[in-house]
Length: 71
Length: 132
Image (tube, rainbow over all chains, first blue to last red; front, side, top):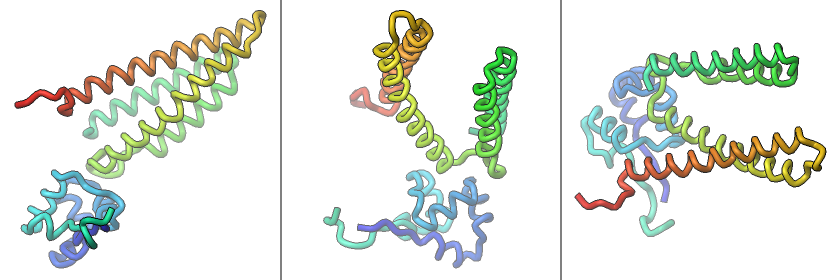
């Protein structure tokens, strides 16, 4: 099971730079980059903040690929 | 941590390192002075504000992991060092024996501090098992 996210796609759809998104979410640009590259798993609070910002469900931003029974 | 608290922390760490450097030079402990100078330069270069927001949750996580790693290395080093010095110091070598005793006290202080902080943080994060 692999963790993925659509943050880069959503950001591109809204025509936002990493800096603009970081300012809107009140995090650093490095954090946005790290989340986009799956190097940092955000807290539930930040994950919800991201989903709310793009007006989508949290599962549309963060999701797992593959079989859930896999470990 | 906001920018104000970060500046306060940075000031106190810098002040400590400067005082240590000064005292080391005063007591002719040149190796200590050099190490204090290097530590100060590294601290001022690496630990700095990266933007408008000083620390967000990722940076907080980085600091927590860095602190954890520091403890993981420092505590056993101090503990093993104290045992080694106490075992190896001969009856006439009071300097090594004293150093071993100081290291042992520091190790005990660290263990106590870890136990207490772990207990209180666990309770704060719901580890007391109380039902609502």
